Length: 115
View 1 (tube, rainbow, N blue to C red):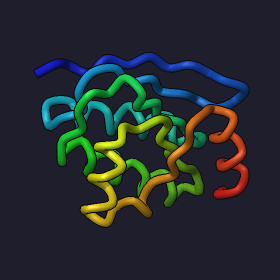
View 2: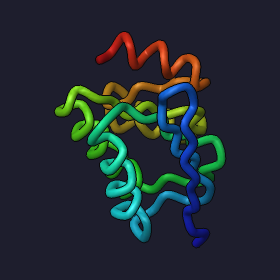
View 3: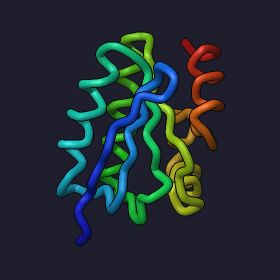
């Protein structure tokens, strides 16, 4: 199974975590820790554009960090998730756990609205 790589950018005051690869049980915990590190201070955008696969473990990790960030008055926004990811969240009725955006600019607008 393909590993998950990441890079972090600062886009106009918003941290963007760019992911590339598969989000699965083998890297879900490490991703949770990475996102939690950034959501201690602010909301973040997780760019899922180059994520090919999200397993149930990966989905659970994204739910966990989303709930955790929200408890601190921050948010985890998911940018450009695949159609398969969107369908999975609807089937599992977890869609309302996420704020989904198509761009960093939309993320900045929604962060202001949701926090």
